[in-house]
Length: 110
Image 1: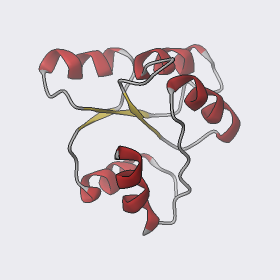
Image 2: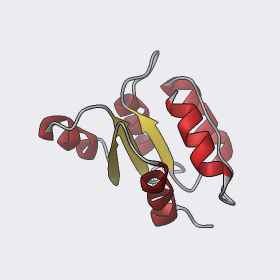
Image 3: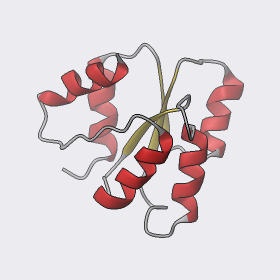
């Protein structure tokens, strides 16, 4: 459902959008595509968002890519954990299309 919302929100923009169903596939996609920004759910199968972010930061070619975590939690501890894993931002579910597009505009190059 979140992927559909993101796809709908981004359809009206000039940005290219890619999706992966879990953190391991996301990491491989990020390595291949080298996006301007990564939006990642925290809770994912196979490799969660935090492990994916840690792997990105361990790889010099990917370490500079900003990560914005999407999470259902609005608790301070969970938000702090996002930033401990290198996030430049956080979006709480549910979010609006306007909020998502504003975050993309903040970090994307085009």
